Length: 105
Image 1: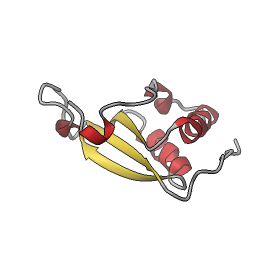
Image 2: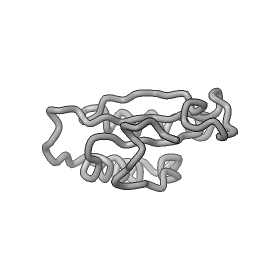
Image 3: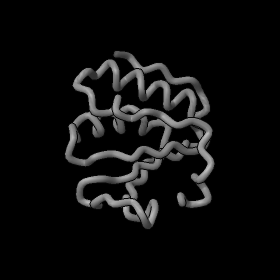
């Protein structure tokens, strides 16, 4: 089970969009996350598949979120994933980021 703070999400995103080569798609995902996420968003990511896309996405959302990298092994005892290959990224909304943000892309 997920930790209590994040156990009841408002929205679940299909994060395969995160691995695209098309930066405009990543910008649109970042904008959507900024607009729709309340207190926290959590992404399960493969660290080996297009890590530069993940880095780009995080650079877009860092003004509105505190970013925490969490070992995937902490998510669930039955999850068969390596901490070297996979991770969880928690995006916690900053208190000063309630304004609508539009990214240029």
